[in-house]
Length: 105
Image 1 (tube, rainbow, N blue to C red):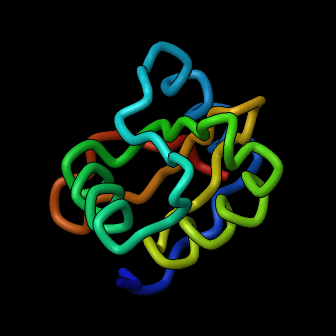
Image 2 (image 1 turned 30 degrees about the horizontal axis):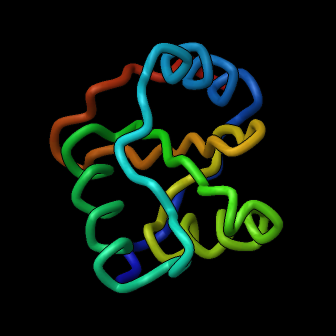
């Protein structure tokens, strides 16, 4: 379920979004089944609704979290903001109603 081309964010923009994501709670959890079709749809729906989300990795997939994160971002057309511990922060701007005003460069 690819959502088009993701715009590459600058370090300044990633830092800005990382600060915004700090207080967010994870809305999706990747469990022992890994990345499933229903999980991909849930991630897509949450990115459309919120633009900036956190995803938590269960202990059972902790070793694969880097590769799963890359796959999630690619399939969702999203940008990885941060992967800290077991928490992934993802961003995908809403095409019609952007919620976040990103700093220039």
